[in-house]
Length: 478
Image 1: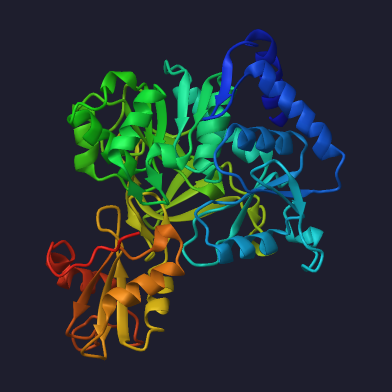
Image 2: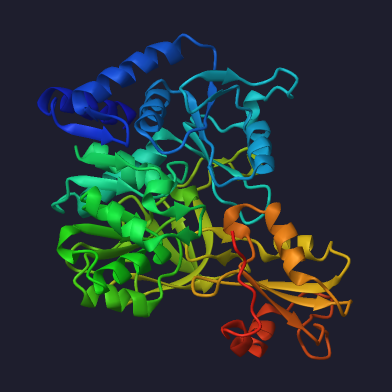
């Protein structure tokens, strides 16, 4: 399929030579120019000995050109998520065995030779990209994907949405996020559409969870965005923009929503406003997309039917996927070449074959901006503070990350503690508010198990009214 993708771009360079392919805030290039640039970079890359190439850039035309050149040169591309902390970035480079980093200025920076050399056998054969998700802990795993993993997803999406009359896709997520990389950029180029790449600042996005609505709406209008990939939080922003007459719903052709559970009221509101919303579902370990709603026939409350490359089963209420599984996790040979994967998501099919998601099996928090956070990771940092006896971190698509703190001191400076903890956390895992509790979590009040683990559902139910109260809450300024 890699040759097919390459040939499509070569053909577009001839048949759509003057049509815009990519544009950012500084340059715009046509399909003819795109193909020329990719070929030039391929020649450079193929003359180097580097097999594992990390990409450390903000969203830009150059990011896409380098990614394609690495892809077509059959080297391993390792995109660095901009929302990683310096420590996560360093861990990722060491873990991946990256030999060189391409920086924002396009320079190749070889990595220090005092790093332990990577071993060939720590990588599944056929790996084209190592994608690191936001991670539920401070040490995310590298998902190894083949060219076919990604391009089968692209082809299946093209079958599902290829007839939608959209010619311009605006990139909102970091391109290191596989969903935007594959379903945004690759799909658009596969179909011969234009891809617009704006900086997060000019989109009104700060980190993973802060949004300037005025700047965001202005950017959507300025770029005349026809298709977007949105998290539920960003869809809510679009809905607000339409309701306040800042955005015209008819300007959009396709709004793909995924990354976290979409609250049904937001979904109903979007449909009522005439927005072309299509909810989907996927995971990096499956090339980013598993199922997607049918254009013009979306099924409310579902993530649609599986795409043609995906087989989905429900086993013990859990969603299992097969047909396009990852090659495996880096450095974990026991995970390589799986035939099927458990997703950790609970689900069921409706009577028409649409997949409905019912929640997560485990405790991982999925924020409104589609980031995964392991609460035990953050709780561990909190309880390292001498004044904090116990901590429970709760949150979901509607509740910002909230720390419930039990203190062993009467004069605890909780604001200072939260600010100190947040300095060491990536943006998507920062605590947004806290509540001070006077009663500890115990076995007697059924908020702890016999082995001392938090009973999260009990704690949440007990403090539900407090969690959503506007009083006695400290909003962290980031």
